[in-house]
Length: 176
Image (cartoon, rainbow, N blue to C red; front, side, top):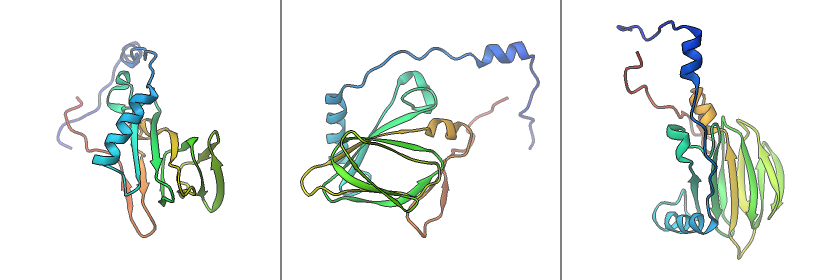
């Protein structure tokens, strides 16, 4: 380390610098979400038969959250689609908007349908399957990715046999 990156400040100054602007109320209209999902399905899906969009509130800045500390995405699974098992250091709350299927979370099979809510704890292996032969499954997913990212502890591991990925960017700039 050639240049110190630490400093001492008065606690009152710390309190002042810790203040953040209030986050304004916001709404994401389903018609807009649906339109973006259609675009992503054609142009940039996560995998064949699976795509997602993130709801982002501009007031959350670089954390790209739906509100401070939380992110939200809408995932779509084509009929019969089985997403590969994975895990990450953030939690995930799933709200089933449409469809039927199941998820396996740390070995426990959870069957779900429209209106159900289920939870995958941090670092739990989980996978999802749309069991319908005709209907897409749509899951709203709420996660604490902005929180774990800010702490530098966001990790991801794909299907078995893949290594861990530390999802943190390098420091790009002088913080002093």
